[in-house]
Length: 363
Image 1 (spheres, rainbow, N blue to C red):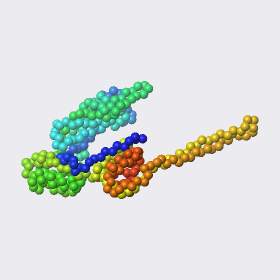
Image 2 (spheres, rainbow, N blue to C red; image 1 turned 90 degrees about the vertical axis):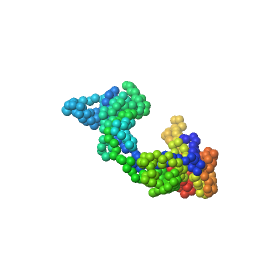
Image 3 (cartoon, rainbow, N blue to C red; image 1 turned 180 degrees about the horizontal axis):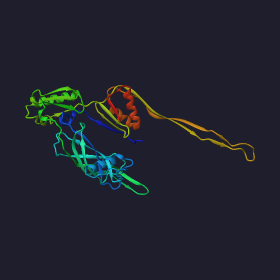
Image 4 (cartoon, rainbow, N blue to C red; image 1 turned 135 degrees about the vertical axis):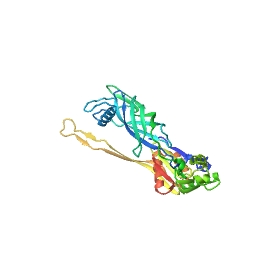
């Protein structure tokens, strides 16, 4: 049971410091691409796949040996120092041929650990099926395991690891950023007010009409109107313009930790709240009745049930006036010793009654 409720109050942005546009938006076309590949890890100390349970490991190992000129057709081999893995990476925007990438290695068979293993050359494909990078190197595992005859211990996740700079870009993404005539700014948290402020701030910085709001999540910037040498030069100035973002009234509740995060612009309409706990307890205590000595008779078991209903004192019926901030309500309930679980139930009920004017998120 959580002992106390943690309340985090986020103050309004009216008194907050402005934020750079680059921290509020994503630039259209400037994005990363996910890569994935299927490879083989060798050099494991007896902690690899059991080939009877992972036949795909034997298949990829045979294919690699065949490409290296070793004929293993019809041969039976059961090494336990190899493991089949999936290799993932992220190709950053504007990555050029020869650039290094960090890769993540994850076992897909029944290998016990990838510690000390070496990834054999693995091509990494994008969603279009083309190969954009090749990965190879020694794995740094994310955990450790020890095992004996009577048992073992595992700390972390030894079946997953990373290879820093373990991949090399072999193909560049075909995207000519310098040819763009307009750039769209995609807001990470779409909001009409924030988008309008971004439009106004950009136009004021240039002293003319450069940006226009298309919707709550998009602002378009005309590159020609900026009179910049290139789109890259235009973004250097645009991304550092300061804007005060608007934030929705929102309440976020974490039921596991008992944490409530809210903004001070959250409001509650007039509502009455009553809360209490009802406990029903039933205990069976059967009695055994035996006959007197030397008397004819039988032992009898008499049922004995003890039922109790206890109602713990709650907060009673409390009326909350219109316009009261949620932080004041939570602080008052917290002062009365209301448990975190009951606090969350009360907030849910207020929201269900339509009196909580904020987005309510429960995690």
